[in-house]
Length: 501
Image (cartoon, rainbow, N blue to C red; front, side, top):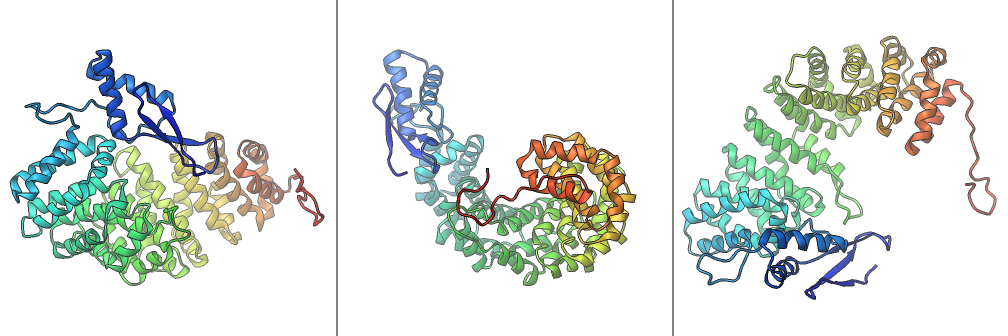
C-alpha cells in the first residue's frame, strides 16, 4: 500500500502514517523529531507547561493517535548557555562540538566528545537514530581517519563510537567505511581492545544486512575473525565478540533479499579458515567460564551444517568436550544457575546439530551422551529451553536408530520427555519436540509403545495437539505410531472445488 495518511497535532504538525504490513489495517505512524519538538515547544509557550510536563503531554497526544515514538528523543530541547543558539538536544550539541573539533584536528577534544557521544547513544537508542539522521556517520568516519595516523587511544574511541552508532543501523556503513574497518582490524591484530571493538563494528554492520556481510567476506573479514580467536585465545571479550560475529555471518535474516549466502559463509569459515578447530581449541582456555563456553558452543552449532563437518567435530575431540561439559554442569561444578542453564542449552543444541550425521549419533551414544542429556533435562526441568533442546537432541539420536531408542527409553528418556510436557504445557516448542521424540522412539520399536502409553503419553499428546497448532502433524504421527486411534482426513481428493475445511 503506497498511500500516506495525514494526521494533525493541535499545532498543525503533520504525521506520516507509513504502512509497514501488507494488511491495510496494520499501519505504523511515525513523525520527525522536529514535529515532536514543535509540539513540546507549543505546550511550553502557549500552555505555560514546564519542560517535563510538556514532553509528557506531547507523548500522550501522539501515542493516542497511534504514533510510534520509539525513535524519538523524548526530552525538551535545551537552550545554549549564552542563549545565542536555537534550543537543541544534547546529542546534537555533542555532534556539533565533535564536528568542530575534528575539523580543527584537535585530538584531545575529539576524544572527549567521542566519549560523550558514546555515553549519550548508549542511554537511548533514539539518540542513535537522531544522530544518524543529522550526519553523525561522516563525522565519526573523519575522526576515525584522523586517528589512523597513530593515535591508538583515539582510534579505539572512534571504533567504539562507530559500533554504538551502527547498532541497529547497519545501512550507515558505506564502502569506504567497510574497507577502513578491514584495514584497521588487519593493522591492529595484536591489540586486543582494538580488535574487540572492531569486531563489534563488524557484527553490528552485518546483523540483518546481507550486502554488508557479503562485502565484508569478500574483503577478507573471516580469517580476521578466526585469527582473533586464535591470537587472543585467553581474552574473553575478544573471543565472545568474534564468536558473535561468526554466527552473524551464517544468518539469513535480511528480509530485503530473496536469499543470502549463509550456507556458503559457514562453509568458508570451516573449510578455508579451520573454524571448527579454532573453536574447539578455544574451549580449553575457558573451562571455568560458562558464558564464553556458551558462545563457543553456539557458534559450533551454527557451523555443523554438513555431514563431514559433524564428523570433523568428533575427530577434533569436540564430542568428548561437549559430553564432559554437560556432565560438569549436571554435577554443579560450574558458575551460577542462569549461566549454567544457558551453557547446557547451547551444548544440547550443538549435540543436536552434529547428530545430523548417523555415525555421529552412535558416537554420542557410546560416549554416554544420552545419559547426560536425560540428566540435564531432569535437573533443569523448570527451564523450557533446556527441555526443548534435550528432547530435540534425543529425537535426533533416535531417528532411524532402534538401538539408540532402546538405550534412551531404558535410560529414562521417555519419562523425562513426558515430565517436560507436564511441566510446560503452554510451550509449543517443548510439546512439539517431545512429540517428535516419542514418535521416533516407537517408530521402529513397537515394543516401547505400551510402556510409554502406560506413562500417560496419549493424554499429554492429545493435549498438545489441541493447544498448539504447530503440534498438529507431529502429535498425530506420534499417536499413530503409538497405536492410538487417529482420525486422518483426506483434505483433497483430486476433484475440483475447495479444500475440505
